[in-house]
Image (cartoon, rainbow, N blue to C red):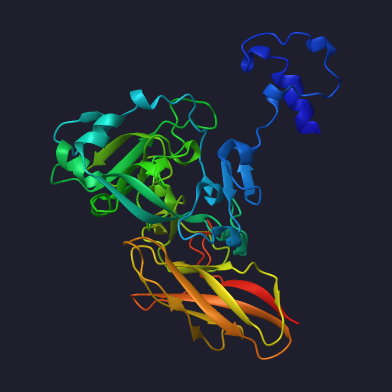
Length: 406
């Protein structure tokens, strides 16, 4: 109520702030009424999200899915998480959108219109897994600051665009290039146009992978505004912060990119294990690159009930950053024994994989179904929350659902 009154007193008192004119008959407004033009937007309508999605923050917008909402093999927009750092750009005219390639390590800077990108270069389509580096942060203890993601800050949509490496080859890059950094059209929360909300990047070996795209379509349609319309970088398998939205410039660097949120502790973890709650020096933090092996049970919803003698069908997805998932297993005895699941191959590199199993329970009672993926380097998910880190990154503990047999 205090917040609403503050909005009324400050914003309504400066009518030009939003509507650029006086509010006619403002003196007759009912006490406590906030005009529609000043009411906070409905994020579900604003972004086309399902009402079961969870809003973690509105300044900036951060929204996650629940596990059972992610059951689709290809994630639709309505279930796709939103992770923003600044204010979403407005009034975008795609016909005037350009992308500039510059930096110390380009032979000659160039600027492309969106139409030139679409027509000059071959287009590719890949399913690519994007996961927030802080997905699972809510489980860390001591608590880590930041959005308290549970398990739903992950997606695997189908992205269409041109390969970044083809565009860089067209521009020409020098032999001393080691990193690219992206720059975008979103606005810093302070409103200061000189400040970038985020400007991250990836080493050249990642920038030059076949699957690293300058994307303009998601699931066969224009990318939704909240996910980067009209152009975004998609670098699957790495923390989603590497996949900049609304990009209008890429700098090719002869040093590790030093943009906003590239320095410690942002998107970095201790280079060596530390005790829970321990302070870590910036120079002892390493940049997150490939995400760890992980899985998610998407069916049934936690709390499922079945009748004794019936089997329970489970299914879900598994992914492993730059690697592939080698095998998938489930446990109903709190990790004492593991039983293999059926696991599909990825549709392409960096896409998540799908698993399923039929589970028989020995008797009436309460159970937990745990899921564990193992990657091609024989590294498996941890059964409980992995090593603590100051920012609560890279939680790849086994996902669990509760089941009651009656």
